Amino acid sequence: MIFDLDGTLTDSAPGIVSSFRHALSHVGAPEPTGDIASRVVGPPMHITLGSMGLGDRADDAIAAYRADYGERGWAVNEMFDGIRDVLARLRDAGVPMVVATSKSEPIAARILKHFGLAEFFQVIAGASPDGVRSSKADVIEHALSQLEDVPSTGVVMVGDRVHDVEGAAAHGIGTVVVDWGYGATDFDGDPGELAEWIIGRVGTPEQLLEELHV
Image (cartoon, rainbow, N blue to C red; front, side):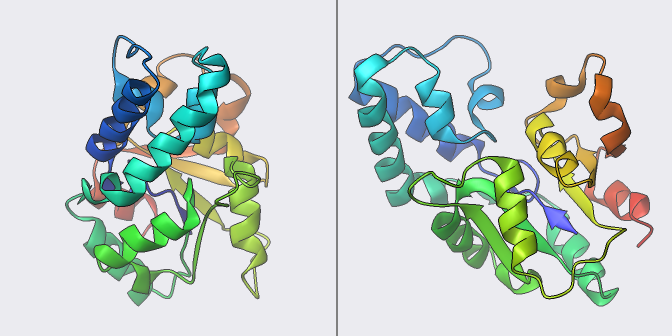
């Protein structure tokens, strides 16, 4: 079982949005309009900031985000209700679990340890600090490569954003989409070719257990 982190295990939006705003302020750039959380939570931040037309200020904004998030933003975060019970049930059922997140791997490990969740996972895989490994597909590959025995069937991704579905699909893995995160609007329209890779959609952690037949 492969779990996303932001918007799936923890409600990290307040800290991410705060550090995002700090980064824009640091380089004198205006904030975007609309729902900032749905725009910035999930995808790699260097891609988000790099797509905002900051020009030669982009690198400074990315550095400012990483410094602020690493110092304080990561802790402005809460575990979603019911997640610990889900992980405990899966562990008791003998289900191997890993985390695959576009967040920097050292910070992802810090967050999971902070909430006492690290013990549930065989692997915590994230983006490399240098940004070379950042796409969801690359992070999932990194996670799977650290497992001794990866079953040829039955692997499932659990995530809240379309890039979770896309990254898992690149490895022939289906995704159960959770609606308590930040990507509900990702799935409002016709999913097109991704439809075959969305194997379930749930609104609560309890429904997730039912979907997984645990």
